[in-house]
Length: 416
Image (cartoon, rainbow, N blue to C red; front, side):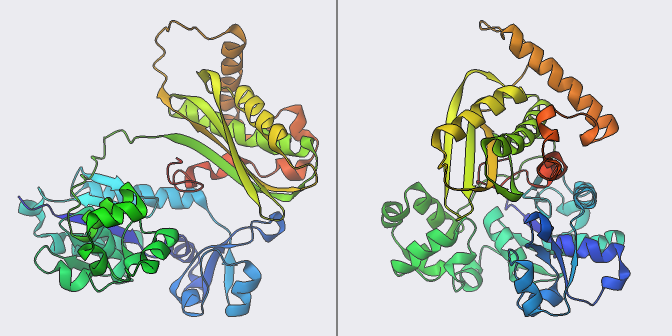
């Protein structure tokens, strides 16, 4: 049976939700943006009116204002985005139990077994778009195809509020003339390599020998050749399937340059508490810690280290992250941003092991869990370590507030 895969992409998601809650914004160029005073002043998302003025995601606010003098900046509201993401997934679930998220605003759906109830793929896609528009007040573009890669490509081709079908018989006519950068997983670096070797379009990629592409790009080259030729067979995960989580990470740009070790430790503490909390929520432990540092001159480095024993206590994560920093820092360079990643995740089943946790580790875990409960009940700032009181401006970024909005792909492709 031919598979029928949909990829649904909510149009201008953050900005659309902002306009939905403030009718005065409708028709105006709008950008969801960070706090300029906290040095998070970049465009996170924009609507079509701002896009037509040349505003792009990642633009600093001054540049967005220069390109679009009438632009309106609104702060992000992560709770609303999460709620709308949940609502759309509930809507998708009324058509199929094979719903695989790809970020907050995108999902793949396998509706192969739903056609007897709801009609063909295009009819299902059109009905989903209608319901998203009428029931949720935002719009979506949906690609319909026989595999995930082309369904994703289809949702990108026509925006906003459109259905694009790419079928097996005619995909060469519609897909192969497109720029090679339009193909899933062809990032800027891969695109430059392909273009330098004479591959400008998806069709030219498809017609290259897979061995030559593998020599140029490694294993990824053969994978991209399969994608270009419509040979993606990857399944859409079921809604109830447990997603493979390789790592948990969080990071921040500090509101001022970090000059001293004490400054760095303060920010690292907040990040490590955040990562530790998320590991407990996922009932996971990690086997190693990775630190990322970016200096004020925008140079950066990463370091990582295995833990003596798998764990997740915030004090252990902080000890290892801060040790990595002190071993590698350039004393003359102020630090602009930091991130911490826990990798090598495993399920914490609670079963006894041959290497029981040392008493101090068990004590730290118990303390962290108690802090989680207090913060859940009374707020993030209800209980803090003493070091967080030394500089309220640095401590005020409350990293857990933004955790859920950056689960994957925030720092690295494998970070979640």
